[in-house]
Length: 180
Image 1 (cartoon, one colour):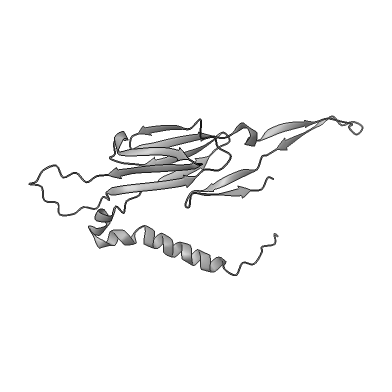
Image 2: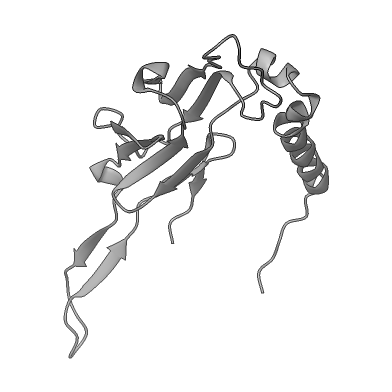
């Protein structure tokens, strides 16, 4: 059983996060065309990592490559663009417009474990995939321990894991995880 430190403000922060999430997503869409005028749309993003890289995938359906830009500056990855509502013919009368349109900006703070120089991006079938390679010095490696061994024992290998900040995808912040 592990000891958990009491945090008197934990429930308050949880409530604040839920209210912020409520107002930032669905609430603006319930007022019809007001969301379109204000540019309430933001693309959905998945962020995951493996031992060699961190990958960001953003859904940008119906957009062309020229409709958005991707930049990395001061360890912040920024995706910026605009999905425009294109009325093809003046004789068309729309009865319902549910797809969201407008300008968007998404920014993510990159952890110190990735290298921005080797970043690659690919846009295919409405999905932007950005790959950021991890730095060599933070990858786990095996260390051979040499020295006097007890009778009947050979030298021992210890597996070392580097400290890696974990990215909080929802807020674009990084937290440091302790090595185990």
